Length: 425
Image (cartoon, rainbow, N blue to C red; front, top):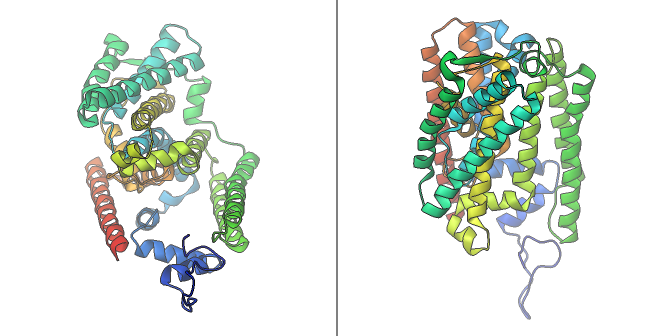
């Protein structure tokens, strides 16, 4: 039995009862109080588990600099436009988080998103399919492509880098074929799909109510975890610390919603993106599938020997990645009110991957969260928006984003080394 459990320590007959606690015991006892939340956070940082701290600090610096250069940057209306733009590539980046978690990569997400937008436009506009059916068909095609990548990896041992690079070229050709000689398909400007991408805002009252949910869910899940740990005679956070964290996140979200409602309000499309991120975060942290994703990414051979179906986990990661890439392409078409040869090309592919890495998902596998895609894409879009307001060349955006990506990878590598050293200490 671990000496971190409450109750009498494990003793052998005739052995003296311990009079001093080791450092791990002290950390556990401190973590049970309200002030222990800060102590536990400091201990995680010291051990190399930086979490979202670097990206949040970077975001604060970026916003401070751009606001000092142009106060319009942090205006409510500009923030609303920024959230609209975040949603499209952000959904694609959620899929990238899945494949990076298992130590793989998908280089074709940009092409997949462009092909999905073209397929949706062709089925809906040119062939008269109901728009929802056209969207479902595009997402299903994405899932099939992801399953093919997984098959090539699991059965033939083809590296995902090579398989998805081949897929990038093949899917781009399919996109050009679907669009035909016209090269683009214009979507009905007054349709619900286009309105979703450009106009629809969550009603103010609804947005205030939705902002209460994360804190409430955090509190309920924390209480359930606390009860289970107490039942197993393990240390658990105090009710005070749970309340403090849930109130803090609720207050922060309500402040953000109040500020956005001073402009147009919270975009529904961003709400969909955030909802997908919350659902994925729950699945990664609180389900058997999520634990298997972490295990396979950490050491796939050890996971296999532990009884995890590694092939099935790889398949689920690639299917989710390609499906979300297709959905992101549909949202891009809604945002632009068209499907064209340029959709999914350019920097879409790189921005989706960069967002996941900048947000904190490890390139080495086994570590990351859905919220890393949210934070990462906000950083990238903040840089793009700030430079646009300053009327500076887009070349600077690529250079700055590249520098931020390099810093994120360096921080991840150093944190990984720190965790290894801390584990040996």
